[in-house]
Length: 183
Ligand SMILES: C[S@@+](CC[C@H](N)C(=O)[O-])C[C@H]1O[C@@H](n2cnc3c(N)ncnc32)[C@H](O)[C@@H]1O
Image (cartoon, rainbow, N blue to C red):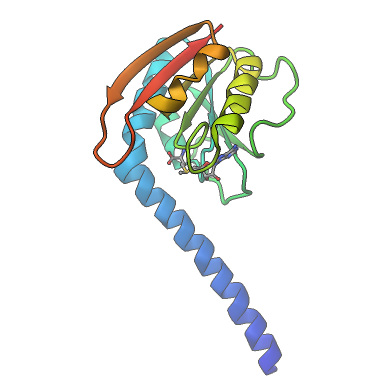
């Protein structure tokens, strides 16, 4: 191989390594932090009688494992990732940045869930957060969002019914809670 070809191979393998590390890092976060929130959200959706959850900002979607033999799972993420694919397959994914065009009744019987993505300070400011809440109120039957209380206070413009759960005064974060909302 010429030195130019070797450079190309090294570059491709480095990119492959970066993606693997990113996936591993996300998995570590899911196991150490996010899984307990998802466990609450998915149990909640099942108890409320939903047949499918739509997880906005799912990253690699490893949390779909919690849904196996219990409820269908759709993961939405803005990047095209190497999405987690458990067997038997009860999951589908969509690489989209929410909000995007969703046909009127596609998710009208479903609950949107989101952990550290929708309304989260590092991704959206207050104005964008409100756009996301408005879109969710149109696209889904209900939602269960993990938010800072500051952002949770913006929900009442878009939803008639809002229930707050597990309000917590975290040491590192602003106060947070889960918000179950519907119209
Ligand atoms: C901090 S990670 C959290 C991942 C997962 N929800 C968890 O709790 O482990 C946030 C993910 O949401 C995605 N995300 C943020 N805003 C989004 C949006 N508007 N639409 C789709 N994906 C979004 C990011 O790309 C990232 O993968």
